[in-house]
Length: 439
Image (cartoon, rainbow, N blue to C red; front, side, top):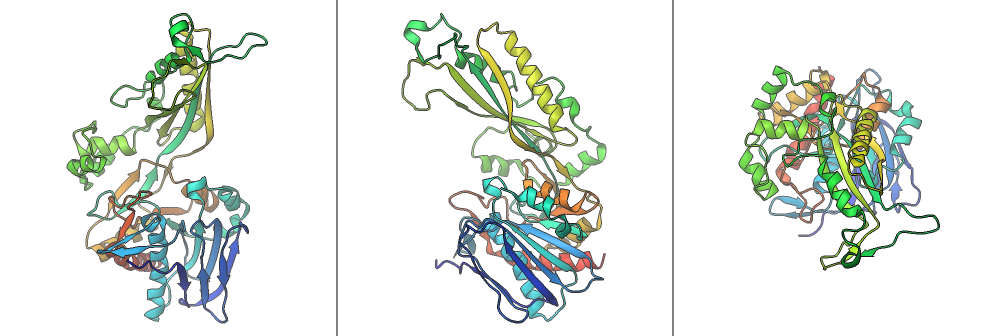
């Protein structure tokens, strides 16, 4: 169980003309060595690498220029054919797969068929600090690409590879119910044995308001929200029928009988292409498991809405705020209600699955895995995808090409990446470049 080395070595690949390595956050503990000749050695000593942008130009100006992106983290252990460690599938394994594909071309003494530029971003789990601004400030780095590929998600199952073409948006909200103070006073917690039934209780009203958001089957109750969603087409329904997805495996993954829908098609459509709403928690009340008798003067609920094409964030926010304000008025309370959107939303993203980028992905997958990949969407959001798309321009293609399987347990205590996946993904990425260059 000896851990794999924490250093990444990138040796001479194809016809590398220059290597530019720039650290955007100097406080990060890193060391970089640039030896003589065409060799670039990158040693990363910190498992929490900040923003790092690395550009390698594989020289032939007549070749298509292609980009890959991933997040960095380090330290893996190989046990029973699986690579364990934080970041093994999200996103150490994918980063190493790209580098290993380059190494394969080098050892085979074959020129890389595309110009490459690699972008490593290490702050996704901390809110992509400054990356959006960086991408906009340095658009000259991105606009020369013909296409981009990101490996930051997973197969839909443990059995079949996939290509991902769409992400949902997230709009995060808070709703705060508070007792209105008298002039010169500050509301305080009250004893429920003395004041229950004589005051408007913020917690009671907050629970009522949260119950107005969705029914027990997850259907959003906010008027107008569903009208913002694109209509389902017969072609889209046919795509869901062909996707390899097993409901028993789904129930096993969630570990309960909580599945709402009986069929794979309905489950996938509500996971990917319909909006959903989730209540995440309440702040301001007693968080302990102990009995309490307090009536708290101010409580805040947190919820988010996952939106899909072509729902616009401003329209969603306007509908949510108006609806909750109107529902609160119906309570006849003397308390106040404030609904706010938290942070920036990550807009939905959808790609063209008929372009040359996806054609190359399909051809490479069929060559390596001897199967046609599923075309999947993701229920979550990957902010870096939108940042790179905005920098590239919407006339350029981005494809999400996952490396790991659905059971990898990203972010969990037993996160892993199957060694077989890592080996085959090296072949897949190398083939992908070739098919893209020869499209």
